[in-house]
Image (cartoon, rainbow, N blue to C red; front, side):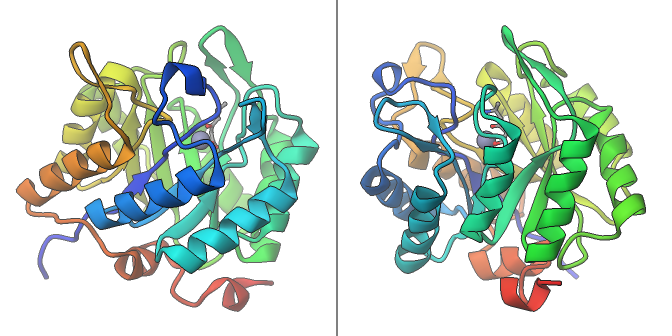
Length: 282
Ligand code: KMH
Ligand code: ZN
């Protein structure tokens, strides 16, 4: 069997950057759909979605999320993953209600973490509530680990509540957040050694850790997340043009590593999503 391809996920918006500071950040539905199509053409298979309200703040409005999930499915073949992290100030109830929009997948942050000048709060009981609600709804979690200790929570969740829908564990290492684990090859190697048996992983490096994390992830057989949620500078003194530029660079590096981008269908197989969400509902 040859080397497996690379899942490229794009996180185009996030909750933190102001549109005024990054004018190509997609913050309206039209902008998001255009970005999604460009990123799919450049090699992305999955989109990690945050919405903004009219004031550019994080929005977890279930109606808008549902409309977005439908529109992304109509206009692209991308796997649609909604953020249940939102912004640091979003309340737990609203974060749980994101799952009412019935995406293919959702992010699940596996612990509390310092986040710049803020704290991104994720209580154990809340993490468990998100996980079990995803199991009921057939929504595939992506276990977001901002700190090495968050990996222990992945194992604890699966041991306590059983496997995720589709049966496969996929972890995303979010590295280089100010206040959290560094985005270094050595740190990535330590996290890879702590993954649960059989798990796959993606990694993203925030800011200037983007490239070392991307290269280290490829070297360890991992997958890539890129996008303006995490990276606004393409190179020294060169702002990112748009999300497709970041996806294109990731696809080029993955191809050079002899692990070209997975199609959305291949990515669904990897993530245990091939049966469709209805087939995974409990
Ligand atoms: N915006 C961060 C506080 C996620 O999407 O699940 C949380 C975050 C993680 O972006
Ligand atoms: Zn996010």
